[in-house]
Image (cartoon, rainbow, N blue to C red; front, side):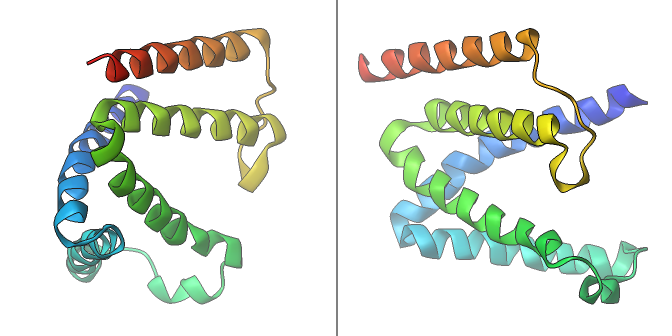
Length: 148
């Protein structure tokens, strides 16, 4: 069953890779912030449809959750805006790879300290080496981008 969730995460990552050039192009045509707004607006319309016809939760409980639980949308808006700004300037691959490394760095910190209710998974040599190799890969992808 875990394989299914890994596959879903992989597909989600692929969608983010496709979303980046689409949003980057949109941002160049209508403006970066306007592109991010349009992207989120269309996403909101789709999610509204899903909630209305397939939602099984209790949306009114949103008023009872800790306020920090509501920051996901704001963080997502920053992420999409940053991607829209980055793609036209450094390309899709470098933008997405840097974003993934950013996600890994903060994920390791969250795991280490058990932030936001996450399971505590301490930093260790293997995780540190993985991060070092990712940073080295970012360097080579960057070098390959500036030489072309």
